[in-house]
Amino acid sequence: MSGLVPLLATLPLLGAAVALIFGRRRRVQVGVSIITLTLVLAVAAVLLYDVHSTGIPLAVSVGGWPVPFGIVLYVDRLSALLVVVSSIVLLAVLLFSVGQGAADGDDETPVSIFHPSYLILAAGIFTAFIAGDLFNLYVGFEILLVASYVLITLGSTENRIRTGVVYIVVSLVSSILFLSAIAAIYGALGTVNMAQLSQRMTELPQDVQLVLHLMLLLAFSIKAAVFPLSFWLPDSYPTAPAPVTAVFAGLLTKVGVYAMIRTETQIFRDNDVNFLLLVVALATMIVGVLGAVAQAELKRILSFTLVSHIGYMVFGLAVATPAALGATIYYMVHHIVVQTTLFLAVGLVERRAGSTSILKVKGLMKAAPVIAVLYFLPAINLGGLPPFSGFIGKFALFEAAAQVGTPIMYVLIIGGIVTSLLTLYALMRAWNLSFWREDDDQLDDPGVPERISYLDGAPAAATQTERRVIPRIMTAATTGMVGVTLALTVFAGPLYDLCASIGDALQDPISLSELEGER
Image (cartoon, rainbow, N blue to C red; front, top):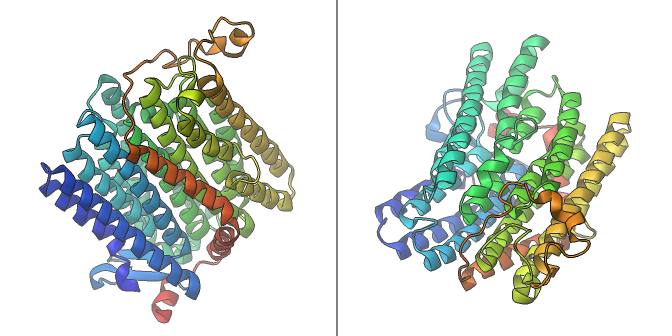
C-alpha cells in the first residue's frame, strides 16, 4: 500500500499540468479535474481502510533518500481521513464551479486559469496532510498559498485585488516565520523529520524549546485564523468567487489547525503551552461570534463564524487528553463539511436574489424553497442543535473538558455554549430576514427597526449585484454536500470511533524506525 502514498500529491500536480496544456478546451479541463480528484478520493479511501484496519501508519522515503536528507510522506488515520474529506469537498465545489462557469462564462472563474490553480491548491493541501517533516509541510503550505493567490483574485475586481494583497502579505509573513522556525530547529537538532524531532526535542533546554514552540505556533495560528491573528480573514474570503470562498473557508484554515495538532502532540509533548491555548481559544470563540452578530452580509457572517469555530478546535487541542483530541478531530471533519456547504448555499442565494445582504434579501422561502432548505439544515447543524454532528462534536468536547475538571475548563465550556447560542442566533436571524420575511415587508414596519437597524452601517449591508440563473449542477452539488452533512450525523458512531482511535494514537505516536521495521 505504501506505493499509493505519493499519488496523493502527484496526481493533482499531473492533473494541473494536463489542464494547463488544454487551457483553451473547457470540457477537457473539466474532465481532467473531475477524474483527478475522483482518483485521489479513491486512493485516500483505500489508504484509510488500510491504516485503520492494521493500526500501522505508512511512511515512504521519496527517492530512496535516507532520513533526514530525503522527503518522508506519512499517512496515518488522521492524514488519510482528512485527505478523504478534503477530496469530497474539493470535488463538490469543483462541480459547483463547473455549473457557475457554464452559466457565466469566464466572468467569475476563468476556466483556463481556474482548473490548473484549483488542482495545484488541492496538491498543496494533500501534501501538507501527508508531510512527514516540517520542511515538506512548509512546501505544502507554499503550494496551496501560491494557488490561493491566483484564485482569490479571479475576476480582477478592485475589491478582490485589494483584499488579495492583504491576504498575500499576511501569508508571506506567516511563511517567513515558519521557515525561520524550521531553520532554527534544524540548526539546533540537525533534522526536521517529525518522528526524529519527537525524540530529540527533549535534548534542548526548556526555554529554547519554548521559543521554537512559540515560533511555530505563531506561524500556524496566522494560517488557522486564530484570534488576534484572524483580522485578515473576514475581509479576504467574502470578496472571492463563491466556489473559491467555499473551499477556502472549508479547508485552508484547517490545514493550519492540522499543523498545530501535529506539532503539539508529536514534537512538543514535553513543552506544553496549554493554558495559553485555552485563553486564545476562548478569545477566538467569543470575538469571532460577536463579529458575526454585528454583520449584515451572509458571507461576512459565515466568515466570522468560521473564526469563532476555530476556537473549538484550539480548545480541544489545549485540553490535550485522548478524548479531547478525538472530539477535536470529529469537530474538524464536521466543520470542513458544514462550513463549505453553507458557503455554497449562500452562493445560490446570491445568484437567486442578486445580493447576500440580509437587509435586502427577502421572500426566498416562497421564491426558492430548495435553497431555503439547503441553507437551513447546515445552519442549524453549525449552531449545534441536536441531534446533528455539530451538537455531537461540541458535547464530546465539553465532556472531555469536564473530565479534566479545572476551573478554566468550565470557563471554556461556558464560553463554548455561549458561542454556540450566538452562532445559532446570527444564522437564524439571517434565515428569518432573508427567507421568512415577505416581499412586501418594509424595514420600517413596527418591531423591525429594533431588530436590525443597528446593522445599517455594517460592511456590505447595501450591496446589490445582478440576479443570475442557477444551473442544476450548482444546486445538485450543494444538495450533495448537505447530504454529506447529514451523513456525519447518521454515521456518527463509526466516524466518532475512528476519531477516538486517532486521539489515542496521537498521544502515543509511532516512531519512524518502528514504521520501517513493521512495514
